[in-house]
Picture 1 (cartoon, rainbow, N blue to C red):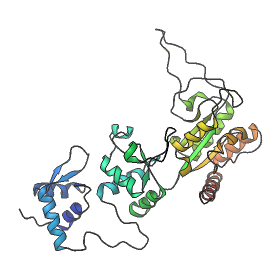
Picture 2: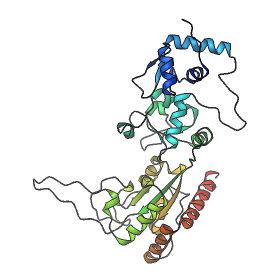
Picture 3: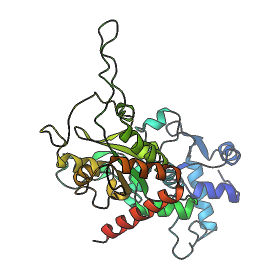
Picture 4: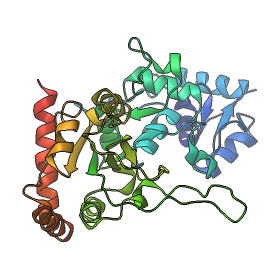
Length: 333
């Protein structure tokens, strides 16, 4: 069967990713009516090329040598095939910069996700990478582990150049925990334990709440972590049972735990601000040497500094510039 491809149809087929294509619905409908595509039920929003589709693309490439690989401007990264391109841009639009795969909780909420073949190619390109875990005995790859992929600096550069997305290193804020906490939740009328509060709600002291208010002004809540004397680095949405442990206690979190938590959170690839006392800063610095700790003085003075940062965008941006400089300085050491 012979098919004359339109310029739009040829562009769509030429950008295929292992036979998967995406594009404008009207153009896809035309290609389907010509028998060049069939819907791909395993990957939302995409279609798969048929044998006739491959034949038509091969004929078009022969008739248009050089058209399938347009020259890029100097310094501009080559454009990835369709689904790989979309996956990098999807990650760049996310707060956590994770490339969404089928196991991503967001996909269960209806967001787009990408097949393993696409993730494998993005990992191989260096545009995304996995994060280490404590049991790793040596450096491992995505193909060996299937762990979530997160954008690298190269991936962010690609998104800026090819997607016009203003994505940069994540801006992470760590805040100290607090002594004053909610009481234990107890049990319901049937004697069943009530759920523990989330970490973001557990600490109710004025000092901690001032740190949290400043953190909320500095970054997205998904990028705020609490430095717990017992648990280490904790996201705001993690349930925590009330506890009474300080850094001086035997049960306090070990520095080695902080090291692995920081690695697992990818803090080496983030600008990081810490809000809290010097004892917690000293605990974090060996694992996050580029940490910026801008607060000084006693608790009352620090509460005032947090209030000013909360209300003054100039102060906040000044802190982030210092944090970025610290990161860059440590990156070249």
